Image 1 (cartoon, helix red, strand yellow):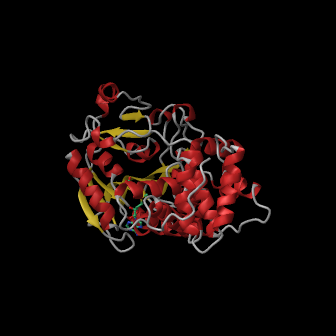
Image 2 (spheres, helix red, strand yellow; image 1 turned 30 degrees about the vertical axis):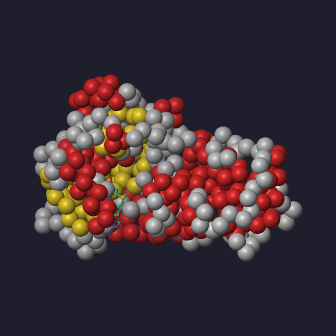
Image 3 (cartoon, protein in one colour; image 1 turned 120 degrees about the vertical axis):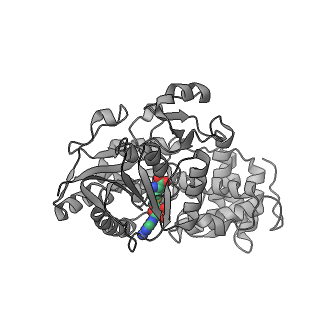
Length: 428
Ligand SMILES: C[S@@+](CC[C@H](N)C(=O)[O-])C[C@H]1O[C@@H](n2cnc3c(N)ncnc32)[C@H](O)[C@@H]1O
């Protein structure tokens, strides 16, 4: 290995992206913030490619954190504290070499300015020792204990093994078609595969905006599991509320399934993406920016979809920060908000109408337990059981007619996000 250049200035090319990666990791691991939410601040004023690099480095560190730390610990006599800049710098340098293919010299010379005034020699020495040993990372990362133990208790050890395999690879890109009858046509045009009518799966890393059908709005990006809640409301001619709607994958589905849809969300910036999506696909829906704890519709409707805010642990493949920052206190907090929103949504369903509750969470307090609690307090609602014919092969409904998707499902075909979905009917 060439001798690293220790004196690289703090503003040398490549350093700002690594500094932003450090800020991102600090935001997630020390402050408990979401990676995406921290990005604007951490990468303020950076050009798009540096911003992308900072995000990619931070995401790889979060995917392989336990394994990176084990390597660092194997090369130090005195353990470097978890929150020390030296450990962050080493994680960033190693993830680049071992996951992103960055040459060792570039990886170390761009992180040393991050420990300015700190133990640069230690960082340089540990990195050099590991490079000389020719270390590598395992194919499947070890999950942090906080996630592994919680998921094992809820879903068993096979699920944890599947989650480890799932996080090692970037997830495939799933598309939902505006016209499910044209599935074969789009599979051929896009050279993808379909696991369900109206779905096309492409390998990861495609440049989405350059694909046929993007400009014409023939499809939108949406994980197969995320497309199930709206599908379960079927074709409709009545009024539907899409609650917590932005950026709008489910609004597009409901409206293209024939529902007159009102999409409500409290985030103006996320609703701007919903507006763009409606414009591109030329699909019609009414948009309301409001807090659902205060807003209410003019009258009850035929169908309500509540895609509730949640811990988002079901989308850990794309957002590996959830593995580290979601703790029981976070789950309890989101479960409290879901309970409140569910209670309000229930009032807006007409008698005989349907309520679909969905969360991209692998946590039972946000899924199975939330619905058990809801049904115990709302005796005029009952589960409307989902049938196998309504789901892709490989995703079976639960015995009670709800749906739980897990990382091990469809694993040979690229897997899917973790969701819990319940379809209920108002009986009185
Ligand atoms: C899981 S995301 C929704 C994803 C969306 N349904 C889709 O398919 O694209 C949850 C959404 O809930 C919104 N949200 C959270 N709390 C809310 C509240 N009290 N009132 C309205 N929207 C809320 C967030 O802004 C966020 O957009």
